[in-house]
Every structure is written in C-alpha cells, then in structure tokens.
Length: 360
Image (cartoon, rainbow, N blue to C red; front, side, top):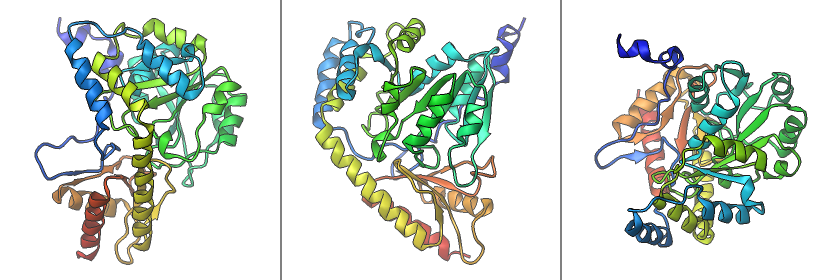
C-alpha cells in the first residue's frame, strides 16, 4: 500500500496555503508580506539574548507570564488570554475546535487565504460570502449564514478596510456561532473590536506580534476571549507551543510601547504619502487602516485591469521589488497589495512605478 493510500482523503484534496515569496540574496525591497521595516528595540534583542542561555530547559508551557502581561495591557484577566506560535496557531486551534465535516464554517472574500486551508485540515469546507466592490460588511448575510464558525479579518486583508465598530456590534449581537475577528493589523487602525468582548461571549479576537511589533521571525500571536473559549483551546494546544526566545522577545516588545508607537506613526505617515502619490497617478486605492495599500494600477487612458496589474507586478519583480498579486478572482485581479516599507523603500517603489507608467 502506497503512502497516499494511507493518508486521510481530505488531506490529499486540500490546496495548501501559499506564503509570500521570501527572496534570497541582497538588493531586494520586500513589500509583499506586510512586515515591519524597522529593527526591534535593543531591549527586545537583549531579552532574547539573555534567554538564549537557558535553552536546555523547556519554556513555560502556557506562556504564563506573557498571558499575564497581555491581560494587563488590555485590561482583562489572564484566563481570557491564550498565546500561540503566531496567530496562525490560534486560528488553527479555532478551526480544530469549532470546524469540521459536520460544522458550517464561513469567511468573507477576499480575506486571509489561510482560513480555507485550516478548515480543510479540520475536515470541513469553508463557504465564502463575497464583498461588493465597496467592501462594506454584509452584516445580514453573515448573520443569516447559520455559520458555526466565522472568520472575519478587520482591518480586512488585502484591502486594509476597517469595518466600523457599530457594524461589528450588529453582527455579534445576532450571530449565534463563534465569531473570530482577526485583528492582525489593529495597531495601524483608528479603532478595534476589543469593546465587543465585554458584551458577547462568542467573540474571539486574535492578534499578532508579527506586524506592528516586527517579530515575524519569532512567531508569537494571541487571542482574547472568554475563559470558557480559552479553556477549550488550551485543551488542544501543543504543550510547549511558544518557545523561550519568543516568549521573552514578546514580553520585552510589550514593554517598549514608546518605540513602537513611533514606528507605527511613521508607517501611517508613509502610507498616506504613498496613497497620495498613487492617487495622483490616477490609481484606485482603498482607504487602508493597515500597513499596506490595495491599489489598482493605471497607465495612460487604458484604465485599470488585470493585465496592467500583472504587467506592473512583473516589472517590479525585474527591479527586485516584491509586492503581492492575487490574480485568481475578479475582485482582486486588477489590484496589487503593497506593504508599507521605510520612506526610502517607498520612494524607490514610486520611482519604479513612474518608470513603468512611461513605458510603452
């Protein structure tokens, strides 16, 4: 019997997640995976270095001190916090706990393409409710979906659009399943969904240290919810799911808010500058409250379209600039998602865009 015959059939059928390209060699400008373009504070590096002397010992199995620090930071109880190996780990636990072949799982489209993969791994099949072109939240459709589990990214990826708290509250108030609000980019936004946790016991909010804290390489994420949901997720969590270095780095990052506040403010200012430059070129750009922009390139009188987006994607790639392109759906095929890098990186990006605009 071959190995493929021994594998659970649903595993062979799923389409794996495709991460953004990780380039090798020098000279690349990496604007494709929404990473922070700045180095972590020295306090974070020092904490990791100190913890590296203790690698012979297992880490705290529950990330207990980090849970306590996160609870204090958000004004909650430690029993309302769970920490994972990136927020993807938390999303995986949620899919394993609340999804499956006999459960109804939904997301919106477009959003984070990992949700269908995690649902499929759990033996389920995700259903999507598509946005209109204005990306307003389809509250009634989501409520009437009958979903046992709903994944909702806010601010949305790939557009950066944030849904108003009033709409999220209307959704949570009449939604009977588990509502997961993925706030990977919340630190760059002007509001968040945390107030919902005071009223709605089925809401889970996930966060990450990979974006605003610039610790994508450490893989630390967490969720805020009720003690009941946290206890359920703890049942299926790996015993030592967050290593010593990651726990120490995240703890130090949480204490370095003054430095990260400056980083975030610079990202916002750079985002606004890039937005203005692209709009001056006639591009359609969604109003983003994340650390990226979702924009439809134009050239001359031809207007936007999938061919132009693909053309610029290839042009930038030849210039060793990486952005993200999602060509498989009409809602995304005419757009590029552009991470906000340092001011110097974004100046180079705009320079290359203007070169492309002048080409035949």
